[in-house]
Structures are given as structure tokens and as C-alpha cells.
Length: 447
Ligand code: HEM
Image (cartoon, rainbow, N blue to C red; front, side, top):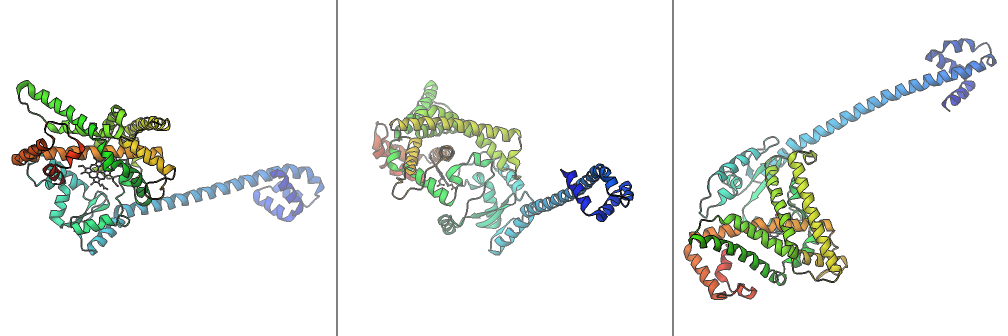
């Protein structure tokens, strides 16, 4: 096709073609051109092939040169663009933010390239947790050592650096209140995408997405619903106390590390209250989450390089495996529950049941109190179930351990709490209305 076109062009504009052919080195053809067009007709056809080849060769060489030049330009532009972004990320933006923060009257550490204060904070935290905690009320240097260091050195409202990101610490209660009430202005910190595997759902959402999820989840925390969970609390506590009683009964006394027992207790309570009858399966999911938490703590002590999560390191692979296994188990529990609900079985006694019912109501456009906000997908429900565990397990076990520590330190308060519990419940099992009469015990929780 190409050859044919070139032949036609030759017959139309002879002199121009002759010049072109000479340029291309087809001297034989050019010499014969002036004698007779006809005598060269066959020759023309054969030479037209040569010409076409030469033209296409020259064209393809031109194109190759052009492509190479274009590729070089693209590479240079991409390298400059990437370089600019990296420079912005590790230096220009942090320095600009530092200037802004100082202008607003905050003081803090000077930004150091890429790592910020990470090395110092890891070192100070390691030192703080290397010795036993002192049983005094002054727990801040031990619990949040770097925040304590920052406040001591730079003031009550100050900033430090988590890698290239500034972290502003606010301790003035009025400012804290203002910030929390303007959550549409003060956005949540964008966390390491790998840490998102552990801290999913509501805790990371903003704006409409947060409102939607919060609305669907809220019924799970209504007092009326929590009432139904009391038997689950009771079963888990009774199991733990019986174990302790057995240990004591051998010699009449025993030394016991209560921390692991209370961790098991809160895991069990959350498994039972979140998944009801599927609580054994829930337990396995929570073991996986505990392992994921260990990995997350490790990755949060170093700078996150964008894209690192895609690198198949041993830790990254394990974190994704855990996440996939936990999600698959949760999906199976949820699907079974949805089928049971479709079959008309009521299942609104545990967190998952309450969540799914609330979600279903939104799906059907019957949101509670106001118009529907739309429902969550199964994947989103899975994320919220994972958050229940994370938000409820460690927090509550730490609270219980510290309460026991303080009760041991102040035996007269222990005595008052015991008397109050015995006065309200006697030898009965705890019941919901009785809990409202526990004034001294409630005060401990508020403390
Ligand atoms: C002593 C126990 C607890 C403490 C000290 C505690 C503390 C907190 C704090 C400080 C937040 C705010 C986190 C943030 O937005 O950055 C939070 C959020 C949350 N907590 Fe708790 N929590 C406790 C128990 C629980 C329990 C038992 C559950 C449920 C099973 C739970 C579920 C949640 C949820 C779902 C959120 C996200 C709320 C939202 O973003 O709207 N927490 N908790």
C-alpha cells in the first residue's frame, strides 16, 4: 500500500522526486529520468519499492530519534517532578510548617531531615519502659515519655516531629475543647497505611463518612442494649475469678500476675458482647488482631516511605496475611448472621447484631430519628468489628489493672468499695439496676 502511494506521487511531481531520489542515493534512476519516462516504467516500479523502503527506513529512524528524545524528556520531567515532591516532603513543607507554628507562638524542636524526633522519641521511650513503673500517681513520664519530654522542654502547648510531620501537643483544656468541637477544621492525622490495617473504620473517618458510620453504630452503645450484655460480663468475670480461686485454694495464697488474666478477661468480654454465639471464632480474630498490633507498634517507630507497604518484606506479608484471615473469618460470621436475620431469627443482643440491624434500617431508608444516611457495605461492617476489638480490649484491661494497683495502694478505698458492693448486691450476682447504686466504685472509674 505504501509502495503504491509513493509510485503515484513520483509520476505526479517528477523534478521534486528526482531531487528527493538523489538525496536518498538513487542516482541510477535520476540519470535515466531525462531520456524517457516510458522506458523507465518498469524500473520505476522496482525503484519505487527501493524508495519506499528508503523512505520508511528514514522515517522509522526519524521516529526512533523522536521517540528517544521524547522518552528522555519524559524521564527528565518525571525525575524533576519526583525530586521536587521528595524535597517538598522531607524538607520544604516541614520547614514551612515549622515557621508557621513558631509564628503562632508555639515552641518546639527544630525539624531534622526525614526522621524529625523519631530517633529521640524511640530512645526516650525505650529508656522509660526499661525500668519497673513506680506505683505513684505521676505516671505521665512512664506512659507517654516523649510527650512529657516535649511539654517539659517546650511548654504546655508545643510541637515535636514524627518524621516529617509536626505533632502539636495541646494541654490547655479550653483549647482541647475547641479543637474537639471543630473536628471539621482539625482533621485527623493521616496514619501509616499499614497501621490502617489495625486502626480501621470510624476512628479514621472524617465528615460525612464519619457521621454515617457513627449514626449506624450509635445504637450499639445505648444503655438499653448494654443491659443485655451484662450476662456476658458476668460469665467472663466468673470464669476468671474461679481460676484465681483454684490457684489460691492449693496453698491458701498465691502470687499472681493479674495483667494477662485481665487481658484475657476483656478479650472474652468483647468476643461475647460483639459476636454472641460466634464468640469462639471471634476469639481467634482477636488473637490475630493482637499480633497485628505488635507489628503495628514496630512500624510506627520508623518513618513511612511512600509505597513501602507494597514491598513484600516479611513483616508486610505477615500483616497482610493476618488481615486477610481476620477479614475472611469476620465475613463468614457476618454472612451467617445475615442469613439468620433473613430467616427471621432475632439477633440484636450483641454488637454485631445491633450493628447489622441498624445498618439494615438505613438500607431500607428508615434511619432512627432522622432521614437515612445510607447503609454500610459488608467490608465496612468488617472494619467496624475490627475497631470494636481494638478500641475496647486493651483500653479496658489497662484501666482494670491500674484500678487494682491503686486499690492495693490505698487499702481504705478498697475496703469502702468492698463494703459498698456487698451492701448493694449481698451474695447475689450483679444486676443492672444495682450498678447505678455503686457510687464509690463509679467514682474510681471516673478517676
Ligand atoms: C477504658 C476504656 C476506654 C477508653 C479509655 C477509651 C478511649 C477512647 C478514646 C480516647 C477515643 C477517641 C479516639 C480518637 O478519636 O482519636 C475512643 C474512641 C472510640 N472508642 Fe473507646 N475507649 C474505651 C473503651 C471502649 C470500648 C469498650 C469500646 C467498644 C467496644 C470503644 C469503642 C470506641 C469507638 C468505636 C471509638 C471511635 C469513636 C468515633 O470516632 O466516633 N471504646 N475511645
